[in-house]
Amino acid sequence: MQKTLLTELTAWLEKPQYWPGVQLYETYGSSAFLKKLFRSSEDDYNRKKLTEELTKLLDQYQVQEQAVLDSMPTELTNKLEVARRLMDERSALKERLRVYDGQKAPAEQMKAAAFEILAINDQLDEIYAEERFFRQVGHLPEKTDFAQDSVEWLMKRRLTLRTYVSRYRSRPDKLQEYQNELFQVEQKLQAHGIV
Image (cartoon, rainbow, N blue to C red; front, top):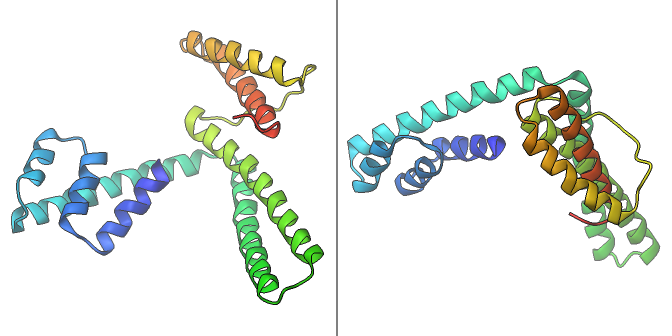
């Protein structure tokens, strides 16, 4: 959500339009009074005040985002850099597929490029899942091996772990352990095609 918010606010401030700005403030702003004021009418005062408030929100969220980025472990920062390069590579492969399609290239060439894109997608999913986990929990998941890998066992374990995560909110040591295991179980289920 943080990245989406930053993108939306930045885009709006580059090209401000009143009513889309009001919608942004409705979504991300906190003052009920200002929400009501902005909804009341579009005038010079409201336009100026809306711009000020959305600028404050952007500044506030940029500071928060920078704090998250500063707290990220080097391992995750390196993986995110790899993800950026993988995204560039995936874009190049997609363009190559378009060219192959236009030139009526052999199916084998197109198939190879398509499988490369799928492999990159899997890598990106894994990296961004770790980033989401870090943003939600504040640490990276620990890598563990499971003796049981059957889908049935994994689904039961996921339900159990969700209960534990809810129950142990007041015990950070146990909570972290269960969050790590839950992340691993969900990754294995995702690999089986179950969300």
